[in-house]
Image (cartoon, rainbow, N blue to C red; front, side, top):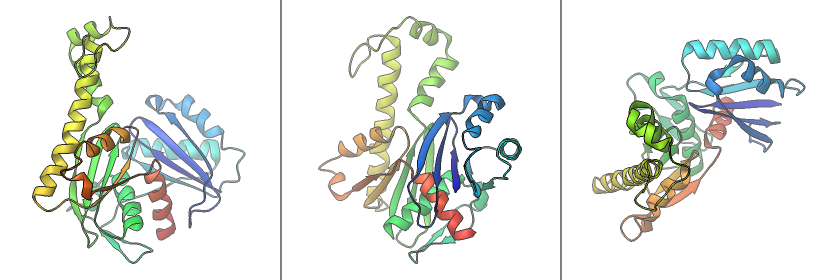
Length: 269
């Protein structure tokens, strides 16, 4: 049995599966990171202690110190050393395509973005855009030759709101008096003003980047979307109907990074 772990900025997702190639459905779950509290994480890993694990394969956006901590934790609780996925200059896929990294230093590209692109290219066999709407929103474009053209990293919906609440005392004080979100498009209390404004920012970003890419003939016809706020990205695309979105196909893949992690492991082990 294989334990696949997607260790993000704020949440950890996992998949237990009997087989990674082809990837078989299995037990799925998730937990909040809880500031990587050791006791909490030990408790989460203990749920797998009785499973007949062969390998632990991890996608982690954490630094080397945090990865070392997690390695020791896995050894202590599960008796297995985790395998951490890495980015590379290029990766040949089962469908004959090859994904080419655009970064001068390939390892500097976030591994979650790399794994998501691997799976997207395997699914599409051609040009596509990958959007992961999590704590940060990452957007990456792959051309018809498998070349990563580049991408964006922007604050996600919750991060926009948290930055306002965390960095501005008066706004946080005012929001502390709100028991609910009042208003619709325009907020009539501070919490609503922050929440609705953040949503408009994400929608605006989605529509603007598609418009700019289309103007430069760089917009792929297919968009693969994942992440907790994927529905908001899809909403932004639908609001472009009649301009660009008639030519765009979207697909929601909630476990895109985990799927890419399984593919990376099967290709490199």
